[in-house]
Length: 397
Ligand code: ATP
Ligand code: MG
Image (cartoon, rainbow, N blue to C red; front, side, top):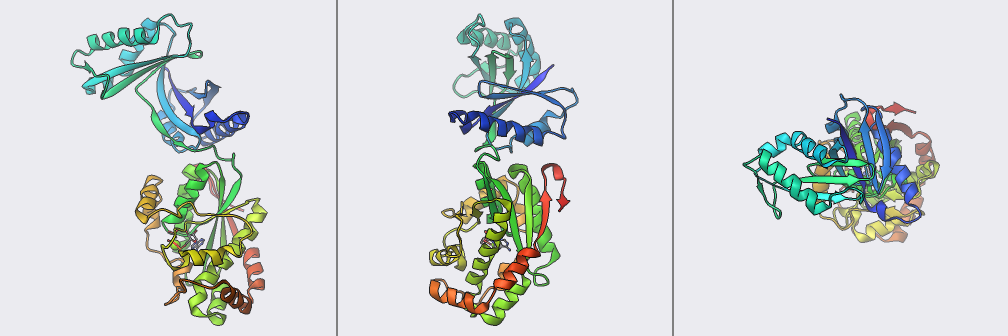
């Protein structure tokens, strides 16, 4: 039986004049993600993209798994293609949904007749098809309020389709419709979630990570690369910048008061991240900070950090509790990687008594005395780039 995937637009269906550019971006993403899965014929009509596999052997379960992580999609249906003829719709419904109908106790039918030329109206389709189902599966009962299974018949201009319900899509806006941002990615739980949240709004994410060998291990860096690779499922291809931070941290320890370490380190991270963002045409920074979570995330500490920033810093987790963040981390499958116990450069140089209410002028004076400019330029120059691509084709540049 011929099957098709119907992809329904999310929020972008509401866009006015820009709709076609959103649609193009979604098409591009879908085609790119499915490139290695099979050959498909694509078309679109009435806020729906039709994806027809050209070979029988295509694994449609895999197609759906991939599509469920593409932003811009509200829902996905795997449907049987029927003739626009009630007898054909009836015969195919009974055959296509046989297994599910055998397992269910109750059902209902929903019919959507977008093609008004089809001779039967929706209530009539429901009634006729309902009685055919009851006849073929006598143990099944009709339950219009709380059915175990809903059979949906869609009569569209392009054809007639039968399926057993929608799978929820990832929502949001298609990648590439909202510009680029640079994510400060640590090995922790929060920053991958922050990247996911911003990418969900259509922003292309690049990632920057700071390492301090030998204080931080190769294994710790690999963990962050693993996170990056996992994030490509949702965020698409990610350019990953790895910044050598050891010299700067050693200089900090030599020249600056210990209680300022964390805040100065974060300011220098922001300075470097902005330099690299500029080269990337990224116009904002993203972090996983949440108010009060640790000493560097108090409001006054963030004010001191932002004082070195000339681009906006987005912190999508700012008002969230750890449990809420963990829930998303589990959903996007980064949690198990994040909880692997490897050190981060932030934790290696954590002061015993960090300043919770730092004064900006004192911080600025300490940074001045530290004389970091040349080291910052060197760290930027020595930054390594690696690209993580969807479908696991990683490459070094
Ligand atoms: P996360 O779970 O994201 O690591 P956290 O609770 O451990 O967050 P911090 O270690 O204070 O908090 O880091 C706050 C934010 O700073 C992180 O969310 C991330 O955006 C950024 N960050 C921290 N360490 C690094 C690093 N080594 N490289 C890049 N960014 C970092
Ligand atoms: Mg961390």
